[in-house]
Amino acid sequence: MISSNDLRSGMVIEFKDELFEVVSAEHYKPGKGSAFVRAQLRNMGTGAIIDFKFRAGEKLNLIKLEERRAQYLYSESDNYFFMDEENYDQVVLKRTQLGEAINFLGTNAIFIIIYRDGTPISAKSPMFINLRVVKAEPGVKGDTQTGATKSVVLETGYILQVPLFIEEGDLLKVDTRTGEYIERVKEE
Image (cartoon, rainbow, N blue to C red; front, top):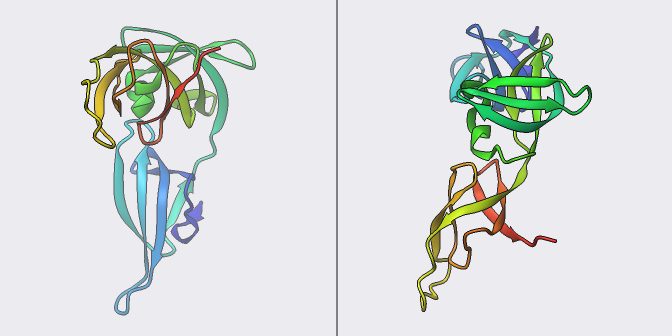
């Protein structure tokens, strides 16, 4: 158990019978009334983010989780298969357990699988990932507007805004935290 005053970004708590990761937490002491902690929490199961106010000093159940690296293999129906890098066991996660990470499941990508009591509960994508463009409209010739962008479809089905010079087959570096284009990757 921890006090709501001790909440920090990255901690995982059990709240309303579900697991939540603390995105941010700020302590407030208004002129009138009692102090409170305003926290932004991400549901580990659904990926939904909620805002909640805890009374200062409220007791919360801190959860210890284990993280292991795993390589994405393939998907079948609503199941996504990963291979644990330490023991080579296959790990299966449901679509709902992946949250936003599902947009970045590129072939052979390395993810962090999060376990609670030996059971996989979710996955975190790496900060940056390289994905191939499978569909891109050609850029309009003569369109030299600064910062002009177009939509492309990546190998995962994710739609991304990119500069006009990006073409089908290009390998792109994508920031998985924001879902934005970073740069075109040169292949060797």
